[in-house]
Image 1: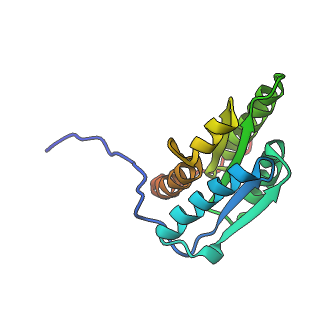
Image 2: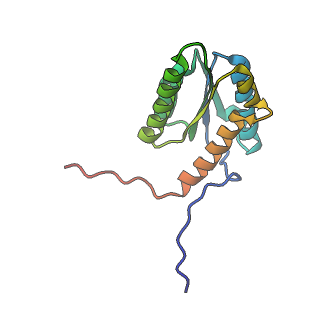
Length: 168
């Protein structure tokens, strides 16, 4: 008899066709974010999710991603919510404040809602760096985000359910 631990791991080949996925996309820097969106949609469809089960919501900028992602997550309709945006450094520290708020907001939503809410937001020094990470030489963060969503959906499906806390 062996004493091996039980290992949980998400898979990339198990995406139920009956689920829905939401993608919240920043319109600011849309020449970049559209590429992120295209990469994410291609991955989800190739994984077996029908395109009509993907809901895309455009928001003005990255700062608005957490509010709308929370609304989508709270609806109970989605197995995951992907957040896509591009924050590019300017002449001030504005980008750091936005990136911090967006990252903290997205992480809090995932924990509060118990749902994969994924951070597909580029935080780059230059537009050239952003284009390189939106389907260029460095890959596509939208593609990576969709792959992470697929893996997390599979993983959470394997884990024990959350037990209600007794009222004191």
